[in-house]
Amino acid sequence: MKSKLMILFSLLTGLALLLGACSQQPVATQAPANAEPAQPAQPATADEEYIYVSSMGNLEFFNAHKYGWKWGGEVLGVKTSYVGPAEYDMNAMVAAFDQAIARQPKGICVFGVEPVLTPEINKASDAGIPVVTILGDLPESKRIAYVGSYQHDLGYTGGKAIAEALGGKGKVAILSIPGVQMFDDREAGYRDAFKAYPDIEVVQVGDTKADTVTAVNVAKDILQRNPDLAAFVGTDSTAGIGAATAVEEAGKVGQVKVVAMDRNSDILQKIKNGTLTGTVAQDDAAMAFWCLQVLYNYVHHQAPLTSDNKAAGVITGPTNIFMWVNYINKDNVDYFLAANEIYTK
Image (cartoon, rainbow, N blue to C red; front, top):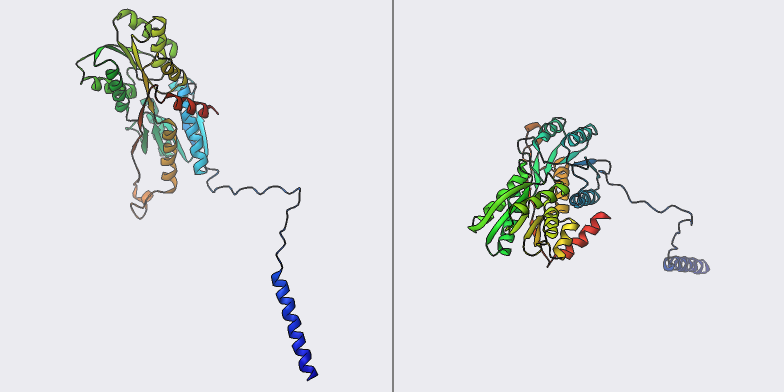
């Protein structure tokens, strides 16, 4: 009997100890005070480089592209670089493209501004580097896609805006870069918009040469030759400020209306003070992101059109991605100015 009691006592004691252990809260383990903080794991694609080759990088217009390209790299977890001359220098841009190819990036985005870049695009493609054109297209090249505005729409949007501002009549001068396809397409868009307004007459086309000082002088000359000019319209980012300066110096603010192109801060400020009627804005930051997205998907996520796309010599995905065109006036200009400050940071 005594032995049975001892066994029962042992069992009860063991059960009590077990329940006591279960009821205790675990003690948190603290890292030493001098321990390094845990670093987030790097994505597997962190060393992949994608390069944007451009020109005219000194223009504020490209700040949004630089921002969107860098932001896209952060979103996708890849390395991004932006290269090219500060001025409109095609020889320097070709040299920058050559240097980009030598770095063997996963993909190249290039401002397709002139056909002189076509051999470079083909050279990159032959080296196994996919190329997407942006802003301007070179469809005869081996680029895999174009991302940007439909150039005709940019001019057409501006043409409708200035026609309404003029009440459908008046003499208009176009400031452009004649002979460059993307700007010729924008000019064609303006002219097509004016077809619905028989009392609007295009009296002259001036060449800005993508230079602000030149744009100012050309606009002044046009005003002298056409004292009854009703409006300027522009196809590039220097045209608007050139026309605005000429109109201000001639004392014709409000008398000669101006619709510009792009969303540089100096242009936006001229809208706020009433010198400019408005400006046509491209979808800049998103454009750069989508260019990177097309390249990234080409490298990583081509849909299985065949059992082996590479062996079959096929490419899947879009060939053209057209971005939104927006018009800026006094009603929404402050939002664009605020974004410009973000881009410079």
